[in-house]
Image 1: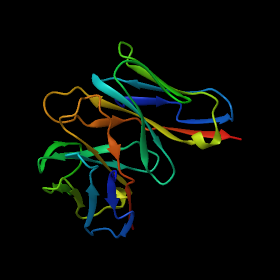
Image 2: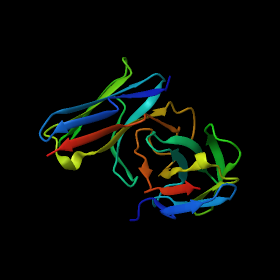
Image 3: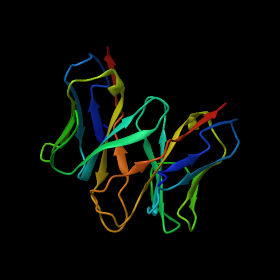
Image 4: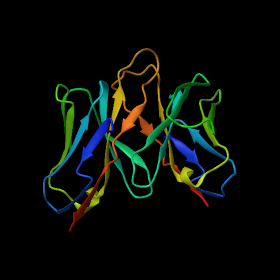
Length: 115
Length: 113
């Protein structure tokens, strides 16, 4: 049973470009959350998707957008990249009707470098 | 002030020492997670707590809901325990859906042989 997978592993972009990151949830999970982790910091919540809709959103600008597909996989899109967008982007999956005490599973992350 | 505070930020200890990492939070929660992050980024969930104490091998996690405080202990520490340990809290569930996790900034643990 594959866990949470993310692609690509690493990505280098230049300022102003656009990027798309992908996440496939653990089998049986229907909810995908995205987090941004800057160097030396804890992850920050970007947004969460289930039933193909954004359900919760953190304090991130509209340049950050997402999508969830019928197979529960998800994309994170960032437009007009800034140097400050350089970070590790983590995807986590869960089952929305799971007990609140259920654990959350994380992917290995995509490290984005903006030059 | 961050909603989740961890201490210490960095901790270096000799192999075999007893390790304690602390986490305090200021919001109502439904659960608290202790996570381990190795260089390269991957995050592994160690514990999920809503009350009391849990033990797994050499790791022990406790939580005091009234005091809004949790601790992660490592007994007989080993160099392979070197990693960043992150505390994260899950807000109270209002309705369907999982509340987002709010993370501390992590504690970088280095165990010297």
